[in-house]
Length: 102
Length: 506
Image (cartoon, rainbow over the protein chains, first blue to last red):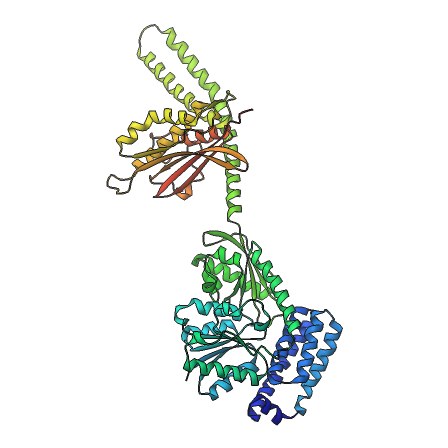
């Protein structure tokens, strides 16, 4: 991922953008923990809510991959497709864990 | 430089906004939810507030309404930041916001925010376009719409149930109240939100409520209690329910208003008690009646066998007189206790009332009591034993007279006694209600339940028998009517006599 380019698109300084992305990753990690417990409780409403918030933040930062994943989680949760939700959440988690590679 | 408050539950958004605004030289305060924002607003008056719509602990919508309801925050420029803003059909600016920015990528949002702040410097607030800025290029419209639809569905449910529903933050502050809760508590929603829940109650209840909340917290399960709490003159029962799986640990409180239920139960208990007392009184009266007849009879035999007027005869006369008095009391007691099965006949309430008033009117006027009588001519007949109803009215009038005379001579209030007859319908049955409304000293609340008991009297010894109202109660009951009281001690008494209308067979 090209931070220089992204920060330019968003009209931010590169280090400022980096800081926001780091904050996003940090917040998302705790959000994902809540997401996991919501999945365990099959609380679809809550899953969709958390995904909605994740999606919003990803949109703010123009993180296209995360936007798509969050969107899918939200939609599958609303449609009651728990299996898909779980699968997508795993991918999201994986991507987040590897975010050091940015 | 402006003082700006940003309220959003996502740290990324808060950080972005602080960076952006601080760079422009503004002072920035941040809050993660509506409740914390209200805390900040207690000590700070910002120039501008940017608020998210969907937040835990008091939503943006509520926050806007609260801000707009506070005079000191009237001049604050309120901007809503939300993706939902674009989806909701209702105009968000109705909440009292001055502008609305759709959430999206930071570059566009940043532009809109800067535009708004620049506008603020040059033109007056109301001249800024109330268009939603940045509604183009938004993702996921369909999904957001579904989110809103399900939210609306729940809202409609909450808005229409009769139980009051409150949501409290972990710190016991009210963050949501449905319309039923607002009406039970009797405080407008804007003031209610962010208030400490326990402080809604009188001091004497606060400890029990805190205890309940504590138990709920420890056990993490629903708790309730045995005796109702008083809230805004209502008797309420609480169900306190922890909301699990929520990191904010909110608490749900269900308020059940059982005031009218309690009243009905009290009426029922009272009626049952009166019936029990009636049975007892009838038994006692019957048992006394026979020996009294014996005493009077034997005393008369003794007296009659003595031809001359001796001191012994004098004593016998006294025995007979005293025994007659007992017999009189017993007779009265029996009229409280049982229906005499005497024929009832149609009568006009106006006639009964005026013949009763004839007995007492002069005394009332003599004592400076303003008497006003409002009885329409065309009232239908009631089927009664007139002399009994007359006795009821006389009792009530005597009590009113007594209550008015209890006022000291120097009392400056107006001494009045208003009598009014009207048709009243209760559960499909038509009654004539006669109301006696006096400005006497009223009846203390703690004895109101006892005033119809036989031999219960507040008058000094010798002044009353304590049977007046119990007889009246018995008579009205035997007429399938109702005797009702409304009184405030020290202010007034209203006695209402409901008697069923005589159904004319056509």
